Image (cartoon, rainbow, N blue to C red):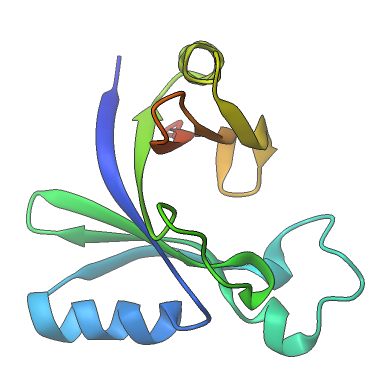
Length: 140
């Protein structure tokens, strides 16, 4: 079974710029990019500009990965949320179990559910104030 930790950076409307910067500065390879416009159930109030923001991107840098996204709606990022930790498994059940364990005495930011970019995803801040994104990556 796969279990890995990946830094996840959230920026305010500049994810595409950050991706290009990391490609140029440290030789990152872009593995995937999804915009908010590609996500189902986005609010009808999302403008074309907001729809073009990055909802989720994955870069490969050497033997490591980096995930990056724009803050939803271009909103300001709360303290402690600019860099989070993404926990990746290849099992929805394992991801859900980890999510449920981390949420004990913590706070659910995004409920665990299937997303366009993940078979099972959730965002939770644990009781120590550390934010984790639990991500399921199933290889085809």
